[in-house]
Length: 77
Image 1 (cartoon, rainbow, N blue to C red):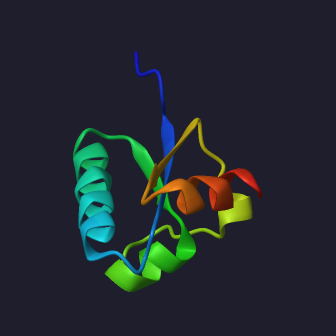
Image 2 (cartoon, helix red, strand yellow):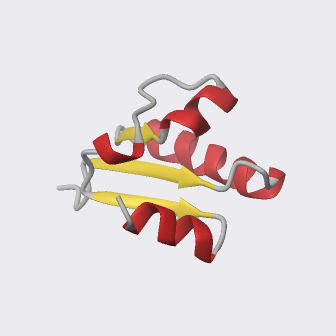
């Protein structure tokens, strides 16, 4: 039994390291059968499927990769 069935990913787009790590997390979770929903701008920048606007991330867990601003942006929605 999985604790999280749907995971959203939000990352800082102007930081290459953050984007690279977010992409690794995305692929890691998908390989394990988790439904992953990247935030729409991240999905566009990496050509990923299932991108969703931040306010529409219907997830059990949201992973934020970046910094304080990324966390605050995610929490404010």
